[in-house]
Image (tube, rainbow, N blue to C red; front, side):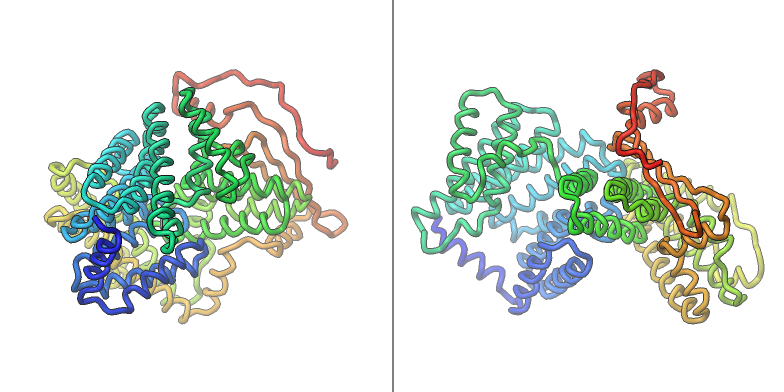
Length: 572
C-alpha cells in the first residue's frame, strides 16, 4: 500500500468530527511526558484526559487517546502518584480499551502497537509482587500479545510503517523472552528488531529522503544499538551474531554513538524497574559525587514520599516504602562519603518507621477544639474505609471470577457478624460504621464488584480530603502542627539532642542491595551537635539469609563469615 495514501487515510479518520484542539492536547501531552517532574506529569495527564473528552464522537480517535493514556501510565508508572501496581493497572485498562476498538483494528500498525504496549506492560507487571497474575502467567501473556502483534503486521501496510512497527514489537518480545529464559529465541528476536530498524531507515532514505522519516522512528539509535550489541555479545555464541555485533560497532559513529559505549552497555539493565532506576541514580552519584547528581537522587526520594501518600492499600504503601528505603539508604551513604554526616542522619531518620510514626502520631497530635477532635476521628474512619475497600478490591483480583461473588458475600456476612461498638450518639450520627459491611454486600451483587468497590472507596477519599480542608481551616494551630510532622529537619534533631544532652543518637542502616552496614552517631559536644559516620562490610546475602531464616526455609544459611572489615577512614 502507498505510504502517502495510508497516512492521509489515517489523518482523515482521526479528524472526523473532532475539534482541532484534540491534536493540540495530544501533542502537548506527549511533549510533557518526556519529563518526570510532578508538575509536567500532572499537566500531561490533564491534556490527555481533555483529548479523550473531545474524542467522544469518533471511536478511532477515542481509541488513540486511550492508547496515549496507556503509554503515559506505563511509561511513568513509577513516577505518578500512587503505587506502581495501581498505575500499571490503569495502563492495562487504557490499552485494553484501545484494542477493543474495531476502528483501530482497521489500521494494523496502530492495533499492533497497542497489543505490543500491553504486552510490555504485562512484562513489567510480572515484577510487581501485588500483581493479580503470577510472574510466569504475566510473562506468557506478554509473549502472546507480542506474537499477536507480529501477526497483525503481516497485512497490506506500507513498508516503512511495517518495518518501523516490527522493530519495536521484536524489541519488546526479546525483553520478554529473556525474562522467560528463552535466550536463543530472545537473541533471534533482538536481531529481527535491529534488522527491521535498519530496513526502515534504508527504505526512508532511498524512497522518501525529503520526508526525514528516520526522525519518526519508534526506536532511536541509542535505544536499539547498545542493547542489541550487549545482549548478543553476552548471551549468544552464534558466529552470525558476532558478525552483526562487529557491524554495529562500525556503524555506531554514524549514529553519533561511541563504539566504546556499546561495550560498556549492561545486557541485564532494565531502568523500567524502580529498584534498578534507584540503583542507577546511586551509581551515577557515586561515580560523580557532585551537587547535581545528589539532587537527582534527593528529588527521587521526595517524589516517592509524595507517592506513598496517594497509595490505595497498605500493601501498596509498603511496596513504595521499600523503594523509599532503597533511595534514602543510597543517599545517606553518598552524604557520608561527602562527610555530611548530619544530613545523612536526618535523611535516614526522615524515612524510618513511617508506619509506626503514623500510628503513634494519633496519640500526641491532637486538636484542643473538641469539634475538630470528633471530625478527626471521623476522618480517620473514612481513611480506614478507603484503605479497607481498596484492599478488598486488590485481594478480589486474585479470586477466580466464578468464585468472586460468593467470596464477597462471605466477607459481608463476617463483617456484619462482628458488628461495631457504639461509642456515642454523636459518633453514630456522623459516621455509620455498619455501612462498610453494606458496601461489601452490594459489591457481591454488582456486575463488576471490583470496580464497584474502588468507586465507593474513591467517594470516601473525596470526603476525607474535603473534611481535611475543613479541619485545617477550623483549627489553624493543628494545621501548623500537622505540617511539622511531614518532614524531619535539622531543628527537630537539634531540639531532641538539647532536651536530652546526655544521650547519643545512633542510626544503623542495613538495606538490601547495599553490601555494608552504615552507622551514624549524633551527640552534643560543647553545646554543638556532632555527627560521625562509619561503614562496615557485611557477609554476602545477609538480608536474604535472615529473611529465609525467619520464613523457616531450608535454604537459610546459618553460617556467618566473620571476615568482614570496616570501610572508610577512622573518624574516632
